[in-house]
Length: 80
Image (tube, rainbow, N blue to C red):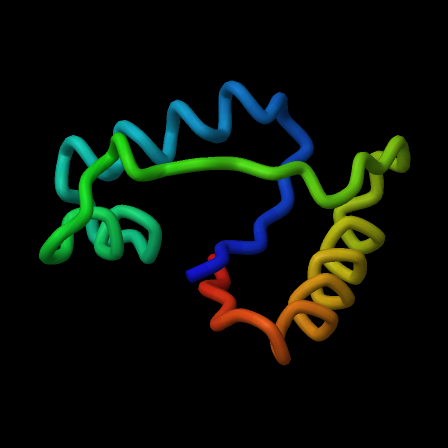
């Protein structure tokens, strides 16, 4: 499964949030996936698809949708 996300914050900060959501069993898509059978927080990995210097939320969201469409044929994308 592939998660495609975007954030204006640092990647490190965003990953810590995903890990905390998983450890605390919060009702969030990434946490629910990694708290399911045969998964845990140690299974998480990250790959940066694109770095965007534009601070526009709209621009980042458009780029995120572009990546989801591009990857859709190859992976099941989990969208947050």
